Image (cartoon, rainbow, N blue to C red):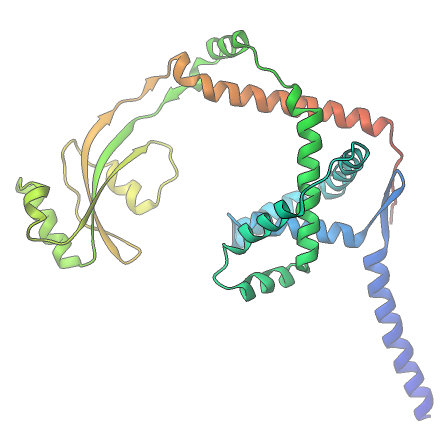
Length: 303
């Protein structure tokens, strides 16, 4: 009886392990002479998550990753096609460039162990990360060669777009301020009071220890609530109460207001060019990929 029970337990454990491996190695698509497995999809998603985590966290990160999942397989198929094109063109990436990129990522972590822990949390090792970076660079290079280098924006296109879309190029109100930073609340209150009485910053510097800087902000700009709720309520030359931000105290003095106005063509030119370039790039990239797809064997394997 013991032997029978042992055999059943071992069989169960083996089957569970095999099932897990099968799920990882299950083919989900074929692209020409290469297969895409569930593991490839998982690794791709983890790499994307790690990239987004540079700027996002918590709920925002999860929402962004969730939005990517919807067309993840199509993105991976397109990436695989572009990589195949890069290999056909014999494009290579210097190992030093990959190492430099990895080191750049490591610098965002206080300790290398934190970096390794984050990788492990995403189910990746450093070799996986280096491979993903290499593939990313290959993809960028083939797109640069086949698409980006062929995008041209003519001056008359910029002028026409500006004339037809002037309402898109309104410069919002801009405010220029002097910012005084102190470490102590009572000192900050005393300094703010002295400034309101008309004392100059230069004379106050002989009695108080503080840092002074300049700041420009615009309506619609992404600002901390503490700053936005203060600076846009100030009148010209008005001095704010001390505002506590991250353990320091800030006093804002409004020096100048530039009202909302229409940007001229010279001011808007760079923004228009960037918009038109991105639009054309996306169109050409889509057309190029569609053409390659027609010449490729692509099969998505249904569950």
